[in-house]
Length: 540
Image (cartoon, rainbow, N blue to C red; front, top):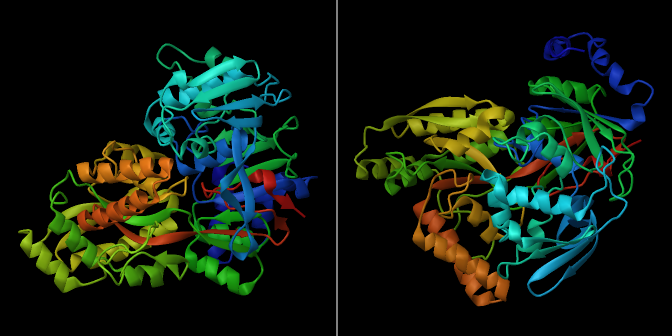
């Protein structure tokens, strides 16, 4: 079915369209193999099938996770509500069947029966080429590798066809965990090199359009903005063969239509619905709804500190006092978030992240700060958000717009298409925006390395630089590696305090991952990347 026909079939649901319209959407998906086909509906989809690509968005992470293997992954544990939850501190082999950690290196023995989707054996040269690629392409993947002190191709050493060693540049608590995130995926090097060019030596254009991995699934069709179809890799050996043979992931922009598809049984699983819908679906009990806090994550208002007037700390503090925190919690989040505002003390009391800041809504205080900044009459600006998550972002920005108007800040809302959001963040031109960041490695220093360090990663969306902040972040990383708990605790409290004093970004809340699924879907697992792991899902 063509996208326009699909959308036409669901466009009238909220207004009471006839029931027969929806089964047409999924009739081909469920033909002869309903129990082995998973139909996902979401607001947005991937803009790139390669995690190493330029500007790959969050839905693209889901493709990479399921279609590529890594050397290692995490064990699972029982999380809140009995939901399987990745274990931050325990690892298991994926492509590697053995891992030996020495003082300044780690050696991996590869599975000798692992094959890429085209049947080519996975060897140590593919591992080295893939890790070389990750540290060399630049942008997000290279910065991600640097978070674990993985920065040079020379660190990745081929011992023999099925043995590879990773040398450490220094002791770093984050190195091993960093090898288990999405970025260090293993790519079919010979296939990609055949499709590379002088201008594109790493074959990024080729892997943008098709997968070249050894993972449990492979993309057989991708129509950007419409659907992704993935088939099970019958030769996958890095874990138990998944129960789901086929995944059809459809993009359905309207939240009401996604909910209708779920409630009528025509879709199996969805996320990115408004929180009000999730609460109502929980209450009616027809679907299973999982809600868990993001690990190491916040939704925030960011201000580009290189763009006047947000270069003035008093303006940033004024914005922090003007935000309608509780209204957002009540009218947008409907209780499915942990508040990150209104702390009882001025300074951090915990060695933890995330934790609340002291700011609360105080319009008069905000007006006074605007006057002190010489902007008693206010100013005009734009506030931007990612349309891939419009269900939360749009009402949130409307409330922020209304509240800032009370202190003279007139905002125009800028709705950025999801496929372009990461590119726009990279430009660092947006003056005021809302975004979510959730650190894959659940450590305070990791979050702050990405979001506040002067290395100025893509997620330092505020272009914030402070020598004092860098010293505290670097100090915490060193202290963690050497086991200096006292210094670590001092540095973590120090960088949280400085972040809330300089306030280049204003945490609003710790969001929840909300996933709604049919009662016959089991096996959902919470992962640090917050996306679906099809390998564990079962459809009864």
